Image 1 (cartoon, helix red, strand yellow):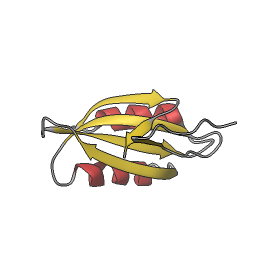
Image 2 (cartoon, helix red, strand yellow):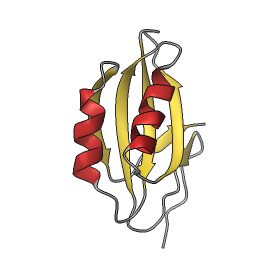
Image 3 (tube, helix red, strand yellow):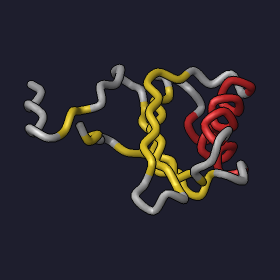
Length: 98
């Protein structure tokens, strides 16, 4: 049974077996393209993809759903090699601001 999201947050839906990665990325034009292109070149299937600017204006938070059965370790290692990616963490559940 899934709990109802709080009034000011919406739960990010994921497919069973999928993983959600939270990336901290330098906020500038083209940063999202670099992330998406890398995953596409490595043939890593993604589902949901979201980006939220941080209050400091220099970074943004990206959420990327990696498809079930994908090479999660490879995805994390490759993402960390990108100059714009500052941090990658796996999250079990994440609520995005409404």
